[in-house]
Image 1: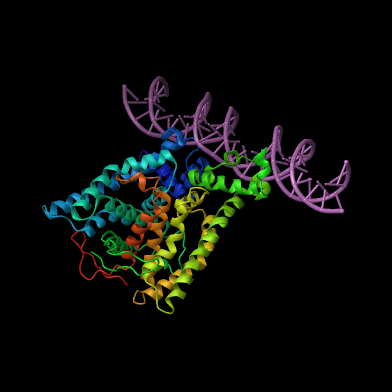
Image 2: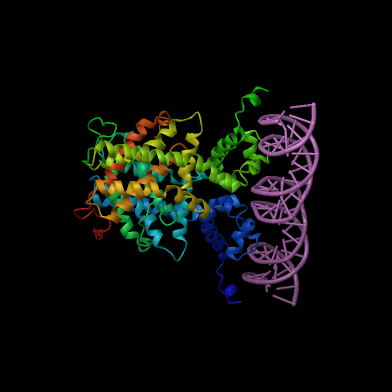
Amino acid sequence: MTLRAVKPQHETRRRILDAAEELFMQHGFEGASMRLLTTKAGVNLAAVNYHFGSKDALIEAVFQRRLDPMNAARLTELDRLEKEAGGEPLTPEAIIRAFIGESLAMIEDGRNGGRNFVRLLGRTYTEPAKPIRTLIGRMYASTMERFKAAFARALPELASDELFWRMHFMFGTLSYTLAATDTVQLIAGFKPEDRHDSRALQERLVQFLTAGLLASKPDSKHGSSSGGTRKAA
Amino acid sequence: MTLRAVKPQHETRRRILDAAEELFMQHGFEGASMRLLTTKAGVNLAAVNYHFGSKDALIEAVFQRRLDPMNAARLTELDRLEKEAGGEPLTPEAIIRAFIGESLAMIEDGRNGGRNFVRLLGRTYTEPAKPIRTLIGRMYASTMERFKAAFARALPELASDELFWRMHFMFGTLSYTLAATDTVQLIAGFKPEDRHDSRALQERLVQFLTAGLLASKPDSKHGSSSGGTRKAA
DNA sequence: GTATGATTCAAACGTTCGTTTGAATCTTCC
DNA sequence: GGAAGATTCAAACGAACGTTTGAATCATAC
């Protein structure tokens, strides 16, 4: 059949990775069975073990395929910005854009599975299974180190532990947005036409994250219910 | 044995719910098997089906037990604040505190399983399994409606769809913080002594979320990276 | 065309899953 | 103390799980 004729070389590997990406996102790692996965991919049940060795190795391969290039692109963009600035510190907003731009761009990518992957990624950040946790941590380590340094240079007045928590919060917002924006809907008012408009979403996110990152410390005590200071640095 | 003598009435139900809370959090719904669960609870394998009917019904019961009182407390606190304000609109910060206070307080609750539950809750928001999604959505619906109205009254100048997204982002930050703060560590710098200090965490969160909620629209062009249109509806 | 290695295939492996069963035990009330 | 219902228990159910196997089929070389 023609399908076989067109098959480049590692067609089977790619089909398995694509199907795994989508099914892991939909059903979780344990919920997506090998039989469901191989059926969706249109390959034999034994193909996963032949090409990847085991289901765990497949999980790792799914992340490797996208996460390494994604973080590399983030670092490249950050380098480009810093070179362009020529010694001057970057604005916090520019650093935020460098970090979230790559993952948000993948949301619009419906052709290949970029969209599936970023949603899978978002839900994996809260995955407590130790092997996956360490896998993700290892893949992010150098990128996070680099971005933390960039933020520290851009915000020299911000204490180190404050920066840690603000980055934690920013990452959480991005993670949840990637994972849950078109799945769980706790708040009424979502407009379906926004679903694939990653540009508008990115602007909203940048606004929110930049303001949060630059939040001023509470300059006075707050009461049990008293109002907050609404100034931003 | 004394243990049997003290057993109040629905001791078995409670032990199953406690074990389920912890194991669902650690291994996910599909990863936590009935045998592991009942062994940890110290009850017979058949006890879950006897008391709850099925594993799915147990999952629902786990959420019912905590989520209904939690959201009720949120609404009570919001009512109290509005009565106290006597017609004046609340500050956004006060509304934020009313929403996140209850769940953050549970983090410090190590005695019973409150801590386990909020972490389970945080990771469940990104769970795409449809029955669980609709279950959570149904349990949150009225609370979210009420808080959205409160925010709208506090921020009359904020467009409706802007408010939707800012609430979405705020909820995401809280969710990720509950789920991942002491599990996945992508950013170096976490101090273990902060782990149970929910007061300090709450202040940091309130600061971040309030700033994000009140973020002003980008009044001028943003930085170098991509000179896009900055306007948002 | 035929040997060689890579890949696919149907079938089966042993294990674990959620659930059910029916007898045994406990609790409650007269 | 004995009947009646609630609960617990060990054992088994069929189904689905990830993985393995060995033969069949493919691609590529000479």
